[in-house]
Image 1 (tube, one colour):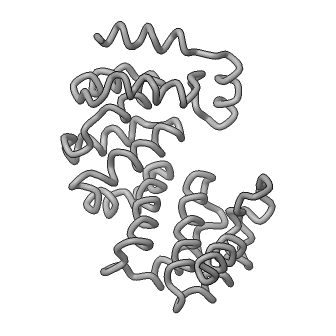
Image 2 (cartoon, helix red, strand yellow):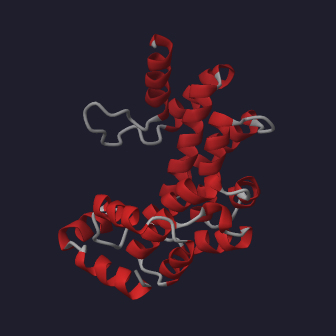
Amino acid sequence: MTLDQVMAELVTLEDPRMRAVNERHGDDHGVNLTKLRALAKRLKVQHGLAVELWETGDTAARLLALLISRPKEFERDELDRMLRQARAPKVQDWLVNYVVKKSPHAEELRAAWFADPDPAVASAGWALTSERVAKSPEGLDLPALLDTIEAEMKDAPDRLQWAMNTCLAQIGIVHPEHRARAIDIGERLEVLKDYPTPPNCTSPYAPTWIGEIVRRREGA
């Protein structure tokens, strides 16, 4: 399929009701993600088409681009530019999780983004840091991360606050020696304490999140 054909198909998948729901979360598209994934499955990996889709600037097209790209083919500066262009939360989330985490440039970008003055960019750095906290913490200064979270999370913008809170929870879950302090920070800051959580889902409030996941793991 050509770029024009793919864009035309995306138009047919547009649902005004879905757009209204997504726009409440800052995502300006109306395509059901299950249908988007089905389209990506039909297209398979096409990195050149993915680059063309990204350059349209259309949110649905960019989400599709991330699904059909080859993460290791993106250069470091290309990924940095893409993140700074990705203002829709879902695009940023997929870019970090589906592409950057699989890139050989992931650690370099994590370090560069972590303290970026743009809160949206910094949130990506924190998301990558949470991944390292959970899977490869060697070389990370966990007490220093907790210091930063304690000092800055309460007043951080929403997306950055969420990413810092995730890092706090991961430290508490994966590293028992820091668990008491992580829980204490969460209890004092009360970030996301009243976040509406559906039944059978774990609250993002860090003390609850930590306690529930540790209980499951220790009971397994």
